[in-house]
Image 1 (cartoon, rainbow, N blue to C red):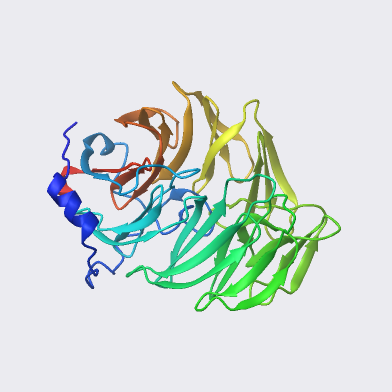
Image 2 (cartoon, rainbow, N blue to C red):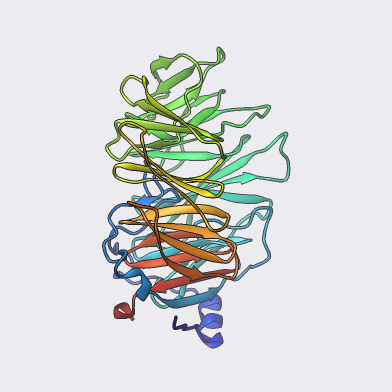
Length: 384
């Protein structure tokens, strides 16, 4: 595999002299990867990818190899990069930078609190929404949600929450809160434009996705209120705890995975459609158009979304820690390589050697890996 590294001079220049992005850089390039979970279904699956296929992926060559400005990690380092509006947003140990995905030039950089880890990044309506959670204490954690101008990095507003933070965007409203056990659980709705508090509840925000446009919030009785994101008004109460982690591609199903059990419910009624158990702990999953793909320790499992029936179960040659899907391929990240496998059969088709594990995204025919120390890109030769 060919390798092309940015010169030290180019890297140093891009690190020291932020530039204002051009109008062209502000335009979206293909579908991109606009959120940590790819979309508001938290699917981790780019179903729009067409350039990288089982027939072309072996032609990938290394493009950018970009040292990040602060490789010394915070409590949990950086996280998955996000590609939107012609810019690549990359968290590292101490901050968040916006880079040109072709040249590696840095457009802007903002420092972050090193006692926090990056939980979620969403680029929506020209804004970058960043959630961070404090990770020095497991008994009394907290977090912050901050909104930046996506093109310039200018901070628009920031709010502190006395909970580990997760976020969801619903139109012009940002819903934020936490679901871990703390002494001050809360969920709140903020106006995306300026951070004005629209509503607040002192009970946890459950799940990671909106269900039929509603947010799942806990109740004192241990049940779940599905609330209007704009007003906090209860639309429906569900008995027991309901914590949807993903939506199916057609949005008619919600998915909940708890260690080794996956439950699929009909979004409209919350009725259980199917439930699947694994002998091994589920460590990563990606929701394709018709199939749920899961890494269960050292197995790759595919389940039909409609019925939960097993499509295949294949052994893995090593331990893998994360996975995303794109087009007809799955990308599994281990300590020494990204293994690319066919989504329809689970068969391996390519290996990309890496220096360390990290977070990967696949968009517009490129593969990006953030190890918190280095951003590495693979691209097809025709795109040079």
